[in-house]
Length: 263
Picture 1 (cartoon, rainbow, N blue to C red):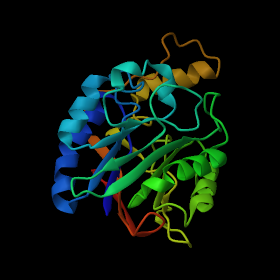
Picture 2 (cartoon, rainbow, N blue to C red):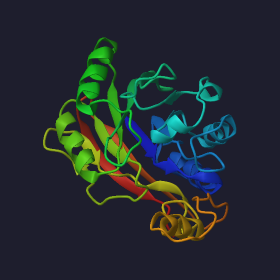
Picture 3 (cartoon, one colour):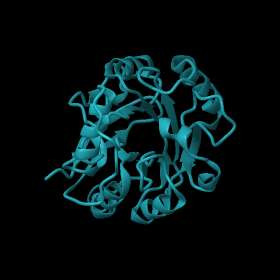
């Protein structure tokens, strides 16, 4: 099975990047299933909205994932979409894992785990949560198992990769919005990359406008700079970061390839 995953979509620029890029990738690579992290896709860069999810779905997304920004907006408006939020959060909103069926009748388990470093408190032990979700869905016998680890430290992401090596098809990281160069098949067969990157404005600071990001950081350092909140840009040039994985059953992968539309 071929799975295409697009990393954190940031603001209006991110939505436009997906609209410009995803249809061509789907035509070129013919993935069996396409997953998009939409947790920054709202116009202010915080979580998703029904409008942004609809636009991403029309562009070719078949399932969505959320990260820590799930905690900053009401989930109910998104509940009707095929969406997965971090599974190691103690909440009754949404689901942390789900088995989706592809158009060819194959089943793929999609789950999100959230790290602890530099994250809002609330996430439980992600190793235990990983074991729990695999036990929970074992009887459903998915053809592929895709795990997204939304974390702020590559050490956490690499540790999770090795912990799940040989237990799932794919472990890929998100959250930093900067793609890493450690794309590979781990020793026991699991496809891995610490962080896939983002979809958004190329000339930005992890997706936010340069000016607003500089002001935010300067205020954090004690400077009096007035308004200081990262803002989502609405202009190009755009970039999309993704990975294309060919799985080999629920515990292994044949290949993983980095994709990018960076100019």
